[in-house]
Image (cartoon, rainbow, N blue to C red; front, side, top):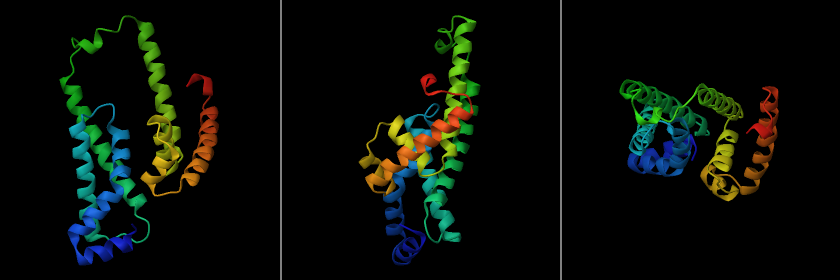
Length: 190
């Protein structure tokens, strides 16, 4: 659904326009939100964030209709809302964590901390490189390699042909290898 189609449907029925937009972009928004909140949010926080994204989209489209493809607009709203929610949850988490908590009892030496820091840094670099691929390539890579989805499933999610998804996976993989190599990371370290 593009901006003109949404506006046309909205003139007939606001509820129908909202429902159709929600149905078409729910998986797309869900993927973005989950990727930003997966390490910190409970399922209900994630669902609430997705609802907030759609509320912001609907309110924004009332005042500023979008023409053409809506995917970038929706991705921007989803990313910004997810980042805000992440920050909010992080502050709440930081206030409630105690060093006496069970999760800290497994740390036995400085070697573990060093290895954990290296792993976190590697994950951050990989995530940055994936993000630098841009949309829809970053979503495709995450869906393919993180969620183990098939090209057909990803194509359905992104309204693309499976052959286009396979081609984008191949190209994105090459770009990702090159970006990681520039940062001194070899495939064997992943």
